Length: 460
Ligand SMILES: *[C@@H]1O[C@H](CO)[C@@H](O)[C@H](O)[C@H]1NC(C)=O
Ligand SMILES: *[C@@H]1O[C@H](CO)[C@@H](O)[C@H](O)[C@H]1NC(C)=O
Ligand SMILES: *[C@@H]1O[C@H](CO)[C@@H](O)[C@H](O)[C@H]1NC(C)=O
Ligand SMILES: *[C@@H]1O[C@H](CO)[C@@H](O)[C@H](O)[C@H]1NC(C)=O
Ligand SMILES: *[C@@H]1O[C@H](CO)[C@@H](O)[C@H](O)[C@H]1NC(C)=O
Image: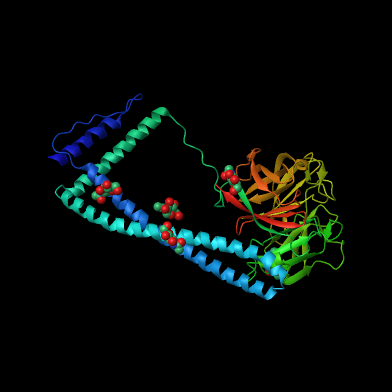
């Protein structure tokens, strides 16, 4: 009887495996009688789980999220069009606004295409599934002639034995288990590429202020999700005393600032003035280099209060530790504030690091304070700017007037540095005064010789 053959075979295997010789693992199988159609069962099994995997619940989730995305996009388009209509003042409307609408139409088109291909695949899947389920039923009827429960059990035992055998062999090869890297709190891997520019605008003051920064608050207050911020160095390319807010991307592009400015102080410069362009807005507060201090200031836009903390002794400030390109440096870029999925960061340099770049986490809280610190081996004057994405620090360098290279990365989880990333960015102007990553939409926002330019960051 076949079943007994299978079972006693298992017993033999189990016995022979109990005392494996140190040099070899193995077992001999001899069988007699009709073979149980394992192949057929295995295919049927495979087909059934394929069916399951293909149909539920991923497809539903994918379909739902695509539909949700479409709904959001259309709402946004509707909003932007009506904003633009209100702001229509003749020429401006035609020239600048079409860019935004075009961007949104492209995204909607992408969503539509994906939705279309998803529904088509689903139709095929459903048709295939019905056919496969019919075939499976026939197959299973045939197999009922065998004692299924026992056979399946036998298969399971054999499978376990096979695994033991593998373990035994692996033990002989004595390969150490792979070491797992520590868990990452962010879903994205390494930055792979940067495409764009996706947005390019001269904004409200074309050509007026070559130093500045702009972007989106990654953790905005409710109702301010589509807002953008802009800080321009309005005094000598060095200082600023206010933040300018725009209620949407199209407002920023057409240069209609609603709700307008939030002032830190009426004088410029004075205590708590923004010094240097590399600032970020996070949770409704601006983080920046305080006027005339080696300090990070945080200006709460709601309460208008400034709190701060000092960087380590030896930190270079007042234009002594700047970013540079070729033989020209960017004045007052001693501190570079950055945001990513995990919050706020700051890069700077110190005397004891001999001008090499230093990275610190900024701990939120009242007051904010200096968190964990990493010492890099890149010289700050050899880089144009830095940004953080998914716990990785990236640095760029000037390649040509039209191309910037993201060449360096420091992974704060593993502590590993890389110097040859070779990711290229097409510039709209030769210089980059500020570069920030927005975890909300994985965009890189660059302030480049008074232009606002954004790029899409693509991850592994
Ligand atoms: C289903 O979704 C999970 C998690 O999102 C993913 O790991 C898995 O590969 C998906 N399966 C298929 C068949 O797409
Ligand atoms: C969906 O795809 C099919 C086949 O590729 C095409 O004929 C059809 O026009 C597409 N529909 C839309 C709305 O894009
Ligand atoms: C299982 O799928 C394969 C390939 O799709 C097919 O050839 C076979 O007939 C299917 N078997 C059953 C029992 O559905
Ligand atoms: C990066 O993107 C650019 C522009 O889309 C493309 O030409 C290039 O091949 C991409 N590089 C890689 C490594 O994917
Ligand atoms: C700003 O102040 C408000 C009111 O005290 C507070 O709720 C909020 O958390 C503050 N924001 C930051 C980033 O500290």
